[in-house]
Length: 248
Ligand SMILES: NC(=O)c1ccc[n+]([C@@H]2O[C@H](COP(=O)([O-])OP(=O)(O)OC[C@H]3O[C@@H](n4cnc5c(N)ncnc54)[C@H](O)[C@@H]3O)[C@@H](O)[C@H]2O)c1
Image 1 (cartoon, rainbow, N blue to C red):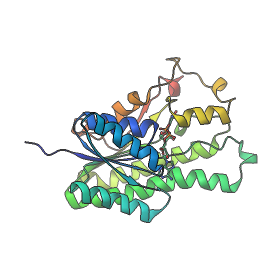
Image 2 (tube, helix red, strand yellow; image 1 turned 180 degrees about the vertical axis):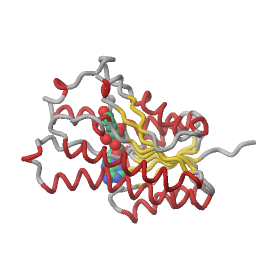
Image 3 (cartoon, rainbow, N blue to C red; image 1 turned 60 degrees about the vertical axis):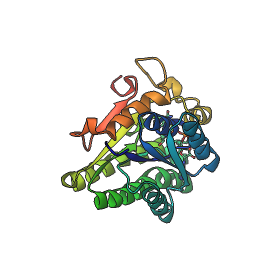
Image 4 (cartoon, rainbow, N blue to C red; image 1 turned 120 degrees about the horizontal axis):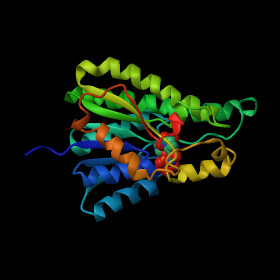
């Protein structure tokens, strides 16, 4: 009998993170759902429990290193180890062109999306080194590769994730820890709707060959593959799941 894999999902209380948690549970994993939004995180756990899956919730603010350590410890305490992590916690752009972008807004986006990702990788890797390996997915964005209108803060934060992922992938390849970036295009989530409401001019500047957004489940399918043994030779990769947006 194989032991169930345990996967930690940050941002698991909504959108892509929730879809990842639900898919992982359906595939037989134990899932630690972590989010700043307690109500959203508990709703994900309740939805998984209702279908007979195994999930628990822990509160997490990725901008607070002590909170990240506590979330990793909570997963290890509950399940004995973490085999994988999908880091989906993030916030959208502040919808301003660069000359108008305030330093506070810049720092907030970079702190949540990039520094928060650094804290998550750092402490997830530390836990995986104790147990002999694992796989981590960092949710970046098509914005890492494309200039998006009024979104330089977000583009910079998501491009930074690619550098962080490549560096970490090289640091831990020999220790059996794989680290990959997933780059969604527009996906039908609360964040995408907030973002198009605050930055309405953006949509008119984008060309998506498939002419539609993804469902969060379509992004989750790729993320779940990247934390599974089926992607055992993939590390340091930046995988686009964007309906062709970055090649158009
Ligand atoms: N939806 C899209 O079109 C799209 C496209 C490309 C990339 N992404 C990225 O995918 C990820 C998930 O986005 P989504 O669309 O599911 O958004 P969402 O708003 O539905 O979910 C994001 C979750 O992250 C949590 N979160 C935010 N700040 C946090 C913090 N400091 N600590 C802990 N949790 C925090 C929120 O509470 C929320 O539950 C984000 O990193 C986003 O940048 C989304």
